[in-house]
Amino acid sequence: MIPIIDFKSSDVEKKMQEAYTTCGFAVFTNVYDSWFSEFSDWKQLMEEFFHLSEDVKKQYSYSSVADNLGYNWVEQERLSPNKPGDLKEAFNWKSPHSMKNQYWPMEIPEFKSLAQKILRIAQLLSHEFLYKFENILSVPRGKLLEQHIDGSDTIRILHYPPYSGEIKKDQMRINEHTDYGSITLLWRFDDVPGLQVFDRGKEEWMDVPVVENSIVLNVGDMLQRWTNDLLKSTPHRVINTEMTRSRYSMPYFVDPGRDVIIDNLTDQTDKYPPISASEYLKWRLAQSYTDNNYIENEDVAAEGSKYILSLIHI
Image (cartoon, rainbow, N blue to C red):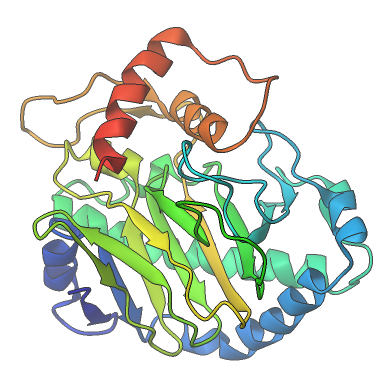
């Protein structure tokens, strides 16, 4: 069962430790109460963007694995590399120093400024969570956070449109995968279900409860690796449910700085060799998109392939 945790409760870190050493997911309430109006306005702009014509949206098409910016249309992305393309569309953006102006939709004048504000709010909240993970791991204050200050964070809006076309074998809204970075914060903007997490102990999929004005937070591959498998990066997916309705969500992917080396934070025997965050992230992205311009490091590819298969094999 996916725990629901009050972020302001006195035992929040204890509950987080229980959640992230087992299922790797939790739903948090009382996290962003001060910014409800901003997120309400943002949902309207999300809907406006995804209701633009396909030709207009494709003017802002996905850049490359290296930049990871812009618009992906339905079936362009496949988060499970050997399955059909996902039944969703998405738009990625980053901090102002990493974002390129040509990807901001000119048709919606307010989009850029509010998107940047939403990103700043997400960054602030991610720092609060990273501080709590430092306490859980008993590492010095700032040890994790300082590795993420200049990180390559990405935020994206997702639209799962009504779909009445042919659904291919094993095709889903999003197929099973693990997230690549340290942590992911997920906002859901409606009551449409579909998000599921794999319970490795019971070998079955669990529904993530839909709780109004909540954030879902999960651990990613890098933090699992950093903690020598103490914290769990868990396979998850979005199944084909209520296909006549639109579904909107927004994940914020928190990644360390590109040059940060991911090595064992614990006092246990190392399970994995060190690897740079940038090489690991690029390799994972290259599995989800067709990008012939990306030439991966052969050693990283060989070691990364083994590790990724161990994470997503179910």
